[in-house]
Amino acid sequence: MKKILTLTVAAATLLAFASCQKEGVYNPKKKIAKIYEYSLSTTENSYGGETFSYADTTPKHMTQEWTWDGKLLKSISYYNYDERGKQSVFSYKMDLTYDGKKLSKVSEGSNNYANYIYDGNQISKIESYNDGELSCVMEITHDGKKISKVVMTIYEEDAPETLAKFALNSVVPSQKVVETIFAHRKAKAAVSMTETIEFTYDGGNVSQLLVTYGEERMTSDFTYDEMKNPFQGNYALVAGGEGEASFINENNVLTERTVWSNNGESNDADTDTYTYEYDGKYPVSRTRTSTYGDGDNYKTTYTHTVYYEYAE
Image (cartoon, rainbow, N blue to C red; front, side):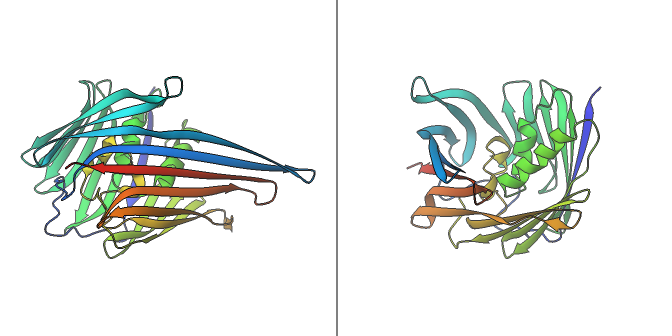
């Protein structure tokens, strides 16, 4: 029997799109050609007054290649890092289909795809299919020009969740929040589950996300720079998963401070920091630094850098 997960994304306030930014239309002034990534994880353990350290590194390698046809993004090819060959190896490709200038479909082959459905100029629904079977529905409602609510229902049998994660990434500007939601989905896979995400805005950026599931709450607060977000307007993030670079935000996130609470008891906050290198107003690299542990005997620092190469 298929398991059913219903995820309600309720917005307290959500971005009113500028007149030049139409939903489903992605035509940036600078077009991304390739994306590279690098990661470093260092861990320190202390026992009996001694400290032991070790590190795990993934070298800089290409992870995405974007193909354009004039003003339209036509496909994104994805690559994994091959440790043995020390090189990027092709994994899969997402093809983008349009109705005029509006994105209508993202597909991986013929049986895995997401359909984008509009009510006039506003997106109203995203339907994702795995192996030809409906696996995820995101119903999107608006209050005027603002998205006011997204209800996401996942139909899962063997828990494939790639497209569902990517779809959620396209409206939630936090990889940490998305990963937490799906971690809870796995932990409670035997029952239906409803989670609520509330958005608070400061201008054109999400300033806070509040996630509630039962007695548990997760609050993420964000700060931003004043530079251009190269992903703004890109619904194709359903295929990319660039959570912190969601199409919603006008600018680039600098900090994400997260607090978890359960039954009224809160843990200490942890903060992810982001730094950028720019060419003009657009980023050419973004580095996220996260620190985890108890602060005394165990600490892991994770650094992940994304490099953007733009088309000529």
